Image (tube, rainbow, N blue to C red; front, side):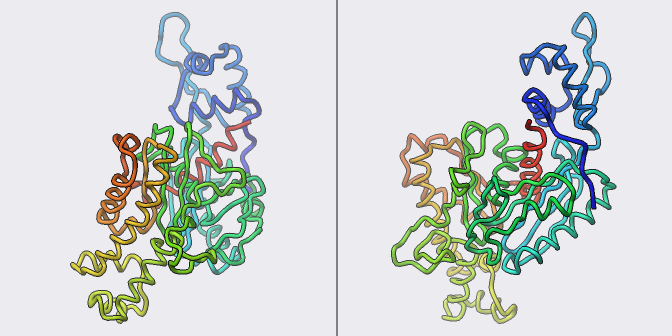
Length: 396
């Protein structure tokens, strides 16, 4: 299946021009010249080349500012990106236009432990369904997020604790081969942070943390408006910060990691133990009914007034807050956004995280620090993955 668009930006000016159109909407050639601080002749030449590449188009005359009217420029109407956000237990895929507005999405359960061939086959089938649904014949590119450390430059997962069989697998190249377009791979938390920056509560924030609480726990770091990946691509792997020397064994092999206390799998484990020990009648009933418990069942038990479930959420939030307090003191962010499926447990978890973080951090660092829930839901990963590949296609 070949869906490739003609090309990508060839010069730094073209890259900046496309980013402006993506983030600001249609602009006149005069406005583009002012914003990029280049001549109108240069803008005209670059717009002409981008039009040939299918990445930009002229969109009629601009409003008169006196004298000769400038021409409006917009992104190419046929630009389409695919975003694939793969988690430990589910995935979301979507198709966007060049400005990253979502045209169609699909969500589907998956088990990351089934391995790359099985999981990617499901993702690609969903992509093909969406492309047929919205009538896409050419793709500018695809972005992919996976729930583990990634070598960004090679496009492969690296020793991911909860992804057996994925270490070193050529995810980027495999997806690119199937879709016939450029592909970029990153970890899921970085992808979610980009989605939040583009279309969520972090829009306009230049220094913030995005904390994902799902089966695992991770943190996307944005500094000066740019994603920070670290030297080896594993910056923000806060789920494996040790919070107790004698805590439970983590998927990474160490003991006492934050993820082993507060991740979705840990909540399910502790809920099951509480149910079997008779400490929670509600969780016991859910366990008998379903055969196994998930983190979402803890939320159900809380909604039914179960004291043990409330305590599980408080314990989880306390450990997360302890780690965030250290990050706040070190990084001094302007905003913390909490996302991931475990946040579906509601404001009880957020309240505990906030309380501990504020109590344990310096007042100077938290005096004007919002800690808020993401509002993007499953679309956040799709938008972030599309943003990731758009940065690549629009960059020279």
